[in-house]
Amino acid sequence: MILNNRAIVHMDLDTFFVSCERLLDSRLLGKPVLIGGTSDRGVVASCSYEARKFGIHSAMPMRMAKQLCPEAVILRGNSGVYTNFSKDVTDVIKESVPLYEKSSIDEFYIDLTGMDKFFGCHKLASELRQRIMKETGLPISFGLSINKTVSKIATGEAKPNNQIQITKGTEKPFLAPLSVRKIPMVGEVTYKSLCDLGVKRIQTVQDMPMELMHKVLGKNGLSIWKKANGIDNTPVIQYHERKSISTERTFDKDTTDVYKLKSILMAMAENLAYQLRRGNKLTACITFKIRYSDFQTYTQQQRIPYSAMDHNIIPVVLDLFRKLYNRRLLVRLIGVKFSHLVEGGHQVNLFEDNEKFLNLSQAIDKMRERYGDRVVINAAGMDAKSISRWNPFTGEPPPLLANRRR
Image 1: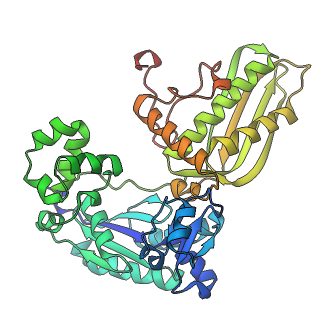
Image 2: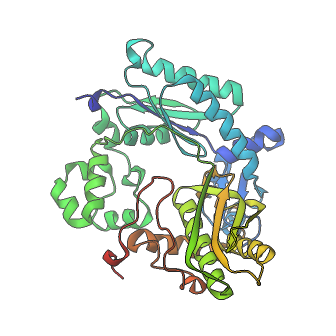
């Protein structure tokens, strides 16, 4: 019963990267703006509403976007600038509400349950939105309802720069006429599967028996059915900024086997980079650690442009290893740490110019999510048999390797 009386706000900064750039350069106001990889091999990370009128959308190849809108202003983007603006918004929210979750660089969930007794949840959310716009200069929209799913969809309907409240009991009528594509977790593949079944509107899902959705799409279908019917008991999880993730390996027997050391290092870096992408994070600082048999320990770090991509990170790790490795001493321990983490990994990764690497990384990550973290690995890292496979953002321990299907 308590769950049905919740007040959950979803806030989303409108065309966030574009809005940040416009604050820095007012000449961009009213113009079609594209942000992302600037070469023809790049992809669109964000685009203005003026650009969307030409059919441009996020993750579209930049060369195609240029063809659709030749007059668009194209910017490389600056993840450090966007991170600072995001922090400004986060600070305003943190000072104003008791419980909030930062789900990406430009997206927040806020739990105002019980606040209606004192202030009125809609009034409180409206005042917070006005304060964010006044103090940061950034446009922001919100949806308010009894759960995360309905609030997120409501925010999408409120955009640009507006707000919507879905009162308790009207969730299903609100959702019914909308496309099933509006349901969070319904991507292109699932949407096509639903369209093949003749399901294009949420109301069609609402009218279907839950068992049928489960039979056709499995566990995913069951979740879609619940969301289509406005059912979502997912809690708002208090946000805590994570500063770094790391892993290290102590050898049973000290070694000078360079091939083995490099293999393990590559596996470490590859696994941590995947954890970054899975947690929607980026790193700007890589640290390598080495301890010799006499227990002398050395570390060295290097700053890099924000990234979570293997092809950017692994060469840096190997270079740090070459700088610190002393061939005359036995090695007892090696470790890798990524620090200066920021939110918004997927979008900011779209600044990568090489579309091939981006597509390859996304395909490999999908396989890992389905079959396990080590189902696809770099050939040079295959000798590393005991690399940690935990999720550093949730603390979940890995399943036993023996129980994994290959």
